[in-house]
Image (cartoon, rainbow, N blue to C red):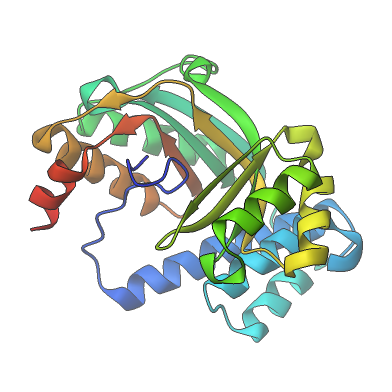
Length: 249
């Protein structure tokens, strides 16, 4: 994760914008379908679905796409997606956690293993790197909804454990996993719907990378995110601002 914010993965996107947009929408639609299928198709009665829809709206996903994804959950031909977590080490010994939604483990697992191997990493067993992270509840808001001080006070009052605010990235409110629903509801009542409310993996320790290591990491993260089955990728890298400037410049 980036040195700018531990909750924003580093992506070095080279593909066409329309292809990236289509891939993002496909992943959001899959999450909406799974969320709708796991509970009631009404977001007011299904917190996971409400969060999935909020994430889709934050990416400007068309309303028709959202409604179609919800309807797909109740269709006779609805795919049965399974939530799977993969863990391994990437370039420079960076720990990587991958969350996927797949209808075929026999397709997804070899792809994940191949990406790790091709880019100088190694796929590990379950819990082989999870000890480097803490699972937390995360609520995300744009910075414009409140000042850092106002968000900090509201978040702590709601039961959150920590808040990170950045004018460019936004507000990132963390809490214990069991408190996510209560914290989200309290903040939603005050600041309206968040951009995201989900479980995240927060690094307990980080691995510093130089320019070469950072570029290799970005390449493997990009490869993971290009796969349709992979929803989110977490890592515990630490890339100094001066290294990021070298890469971007």
